[in-house]
Image (cartoon, rainbow, N blue to C red; front, side, top):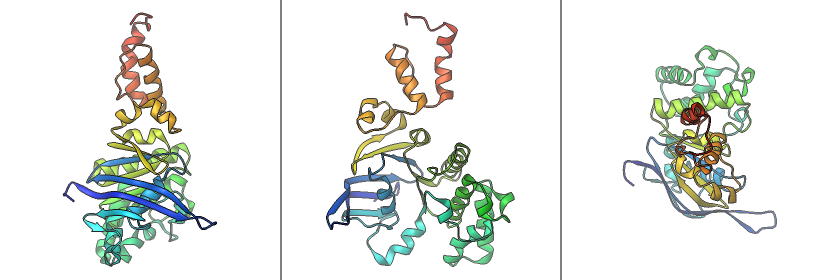
Amino acid sequence: MDNSTVCRIEHVTSHYTTEDDTQKLVLDDISLDIRRGEFLAVLGRNGSGKSTLAKHLNAILLPSGGKVWVDGMDTTDEELLFEIRRRVGMVFQNPDNQLVSSVVEDDIAFGPENLGVSREEIRARVDEALEAVGLTEYKDRSPHMLSGGQKQRVAIAGIIAMRPDVVVLDEPTAMLDPKGRDEVMETMMLLNKGIHMTVVLITHFMEEAIMADRVCVLSDGKLALSGSPASVFSEEETLQKLGLTLPPAAAIAQGLRKEGYPIPKDCLTMDALAKAICPYLKEGFPCSH
């Protein structure tokens, strides 16, 4: 595994046993490299296998077949489990399930304390993590009194303080209102672009994947699509067959292209779309174009 790859998934299959003692296939021969410093979004309908894939990245789950490597470490090697989980931090859907203390800064300090970090270093890491997620003024508050978005940012700060190489976020905005979702997405972008942390976002919100460097789409445990957001969202028919819809701006842009307007395929946000259609608005969107 070269230095540009932080996680490697090689021909991974994953099963679980149902109540009637039969084997259910969840991941089916998945191969994927996650590049150091990238923002990868993994999309798919419920039951597609995306959350199962996430849990293989720090050995919460182990493959039934194939291998998962983290910085060259085999996740099935029990002696490496602590180091693997130090390198890959997980943030889950419900922030309340991740909060362990009655004070925000104590909650963030919990992970580094378990790693045996010195008190002075913990203080520095907590302060840095609070600043990174924009919650410095809330450090003495009870996390349980915060909004959903703020709670999730506390959970993310707790992972940041452990200094992982990779942060995997499994549906982190699924239980949040639009304001909370925006707060968490801004935090993820800061982690990736500001402090160059590798981010893996598991989501079913198509618009959240727009900001990623690369998008992977899972369907029935298989890797169905992979590429830049622009290339993946240009596959409208394939996405529809997979039960997924385009983000709103991409859908509008696609409709305009069908009408003959040369809207670039990378118009995935409303701001980008507005800039692209401005010249046609001035012309009154003529019928002949």
